Amino acid sequence: MTHNNGEHLKETDIGGVIVLKNIRKQFGEKVVLDGISLNIEKGKTTVVIGPSGCGKTVLIKHLIVLLRPDEGEVYFDGQRIDHLSEDKLRGIRTRYGFLFQGGALFDSMDVSENILFPIRHHMGKIDPGKAHRIVQNKLAMVGLEGYQGYPPVSLSGGQKKRVALARAIALNPRVVLYDEPTTGLDPIRSDVINELILKLQRELNVTSIVVTHDMTSAYKIADRIIMLHNGHIIADGSTDHIRSHPNQIVQQFIHGQADEADLAVLRMNSGSRDIQYTPEDFHRD
Ligand SMILES: Nc1ncnc2c1ncn2[C@@H]1O[C@H](COP(=O)(O)OP(=O)(O)OP(=O)(O)O)[C@@H](O)[C@H]1O
Ligand SMILES: [Mg+2]
Image (tube, rainbow, N blue to C red; front, side, top):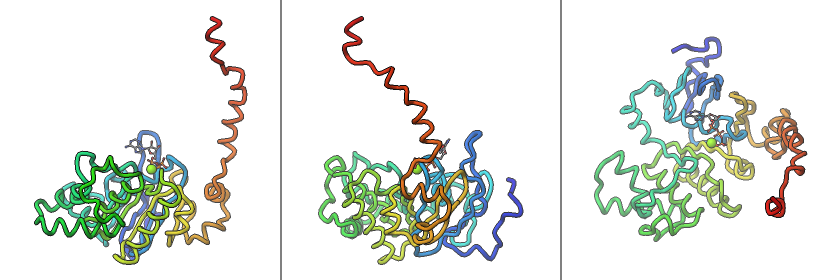
């Protein structure tokens, strides 16, 4: 493995609960992460923003080594983890909870079994009384008491996300990774998820990393916001820092404005009216 010498953090900087040092990842010719260094602070909520396809999911998968970097290092609690075997990683992963993008519930299992899944997967058999108490406690955490026996198909989108969150915290993780937890939810249901993220941080001192496009959510929950663009972190700081960031790319993103390149594509298609057919055009042939 080669390293990008000269850009390494000093050993004394290994202080966060998760530390990325100079992570580089490419798929084929496409460099997705181009030397990312990041120190995730314990007990804080770090929000990752950036345009679709910029590598947010790839970045957070590195935090738990679901993807291995081409170059660079990942540390958890000061221990280097990017080169550990899958077997050793399984142990480390029990300290994390994750709510992945599109991470669906298992339709063949009821709510209770979904929540217990990570426990059974990592710990094997558990005492039924204990299992019952864990499920009850986690459902109370997400405000879904009494939903134990429900099949996932009978739940709304917001309820499914809450069950997925209950499952993510089943093993009392110290770090929870959320990949777009509010996507597809209306503003009220999104805010329920925001409140849950804040509650977990407050009551269980969880360290959270949240990928989102939703700036309302980002501003509400973040202690720190990071913006990823073209393989680099182009902004990093408090919500106030991001709101008043001088970089135009950051301003366009947080205000949801299309940039010149996007607009140019739309202008190119302006002749499309000429090739619109009506049903009559087909009947005439
Ligand atoms: N396993 C993979 N193999 C090949 N390319 C991949 C793989 N995973 C991600 N990519 C590519 O890496 C880039 C970043 O993908 P990623 O899913 O991290 O984007 P994202 O920022 O999470 O986007 P979105 O906001 O749409 O979820 C994309 O170009 C994607 O096609
Ligand atoms: Mg993604």
